[in-house]
Length: 345
Image 1: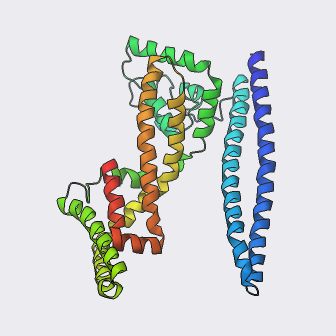
Image 2 (image 1 turned 135 degrees about the horizontal axis):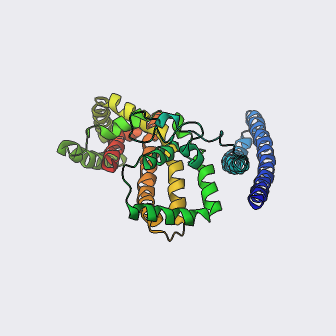
Image 3 (image 1 turned 180 degrees about the vertical axis):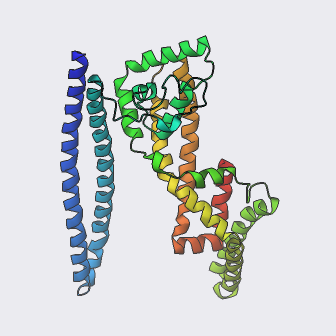
């Protein structure tokens, strides 16, 4: 017990010091970013009297973008290390038999279950609260399902015990996973829009007319652009008319497209963070058969999640009015994105 106490104290102190260092870096970058922003306004002011100053603006803008990106990355590291500091503080509390900081699983209480209610599997001071080191709401639901497993076999119990013994030795992995998982805040996100989309019938996929249009129209647009470069006054009106036709086709499905984009966009950040968790599992060196099974699933899931994120990123480009106008009038952009998302689904 004493060894564990000093172990958690040392880790808490280490992560706390890292947080302080990162916090100072965040403050410095924030001041630098403010200074660069003010300097850019000053350059714009000078440029009105001397146009040569406009040439100085792009490097300043690039520097500002770099500082914003750098600030975001350091902030993400700070949040992670703050959670790592927190989990070690919570484990110190556990050594004093204090589990109140961990979810007690009250939402999983089922008076009609054949044994869970009598054995106090869920609720204050329950087995669930004692075991719970889940970093995500999905993880907590999986833990609850495992505790409610009707008749686990001897083999499944042995496989889980082997996995637990292996993970018990890997504090770095367990605490990182908890800390990263708690950055998700997935318990507060309404998943109804995403689940509804996953269950919906395909709007474009499997319909020959759309498959033909998505290939044919971009080719026609490209040919018309080539002709327009060759003879502007003759072919530009044709290109304009063809672009208007494509915009009109998109407009018939605009409500469905917008609803889909909104439902998926709010989950993109969440999926990006899930991908980080899946990558961590995929890169780990496990030997237990149960962990290897989970690792294989994680690798497959990681690939699919990354592809989903790329597709949603592309879909979100339609929020830019100019990009949306050109994309849809030349390429049926919204349909192209939706078609690929339906293939992913």
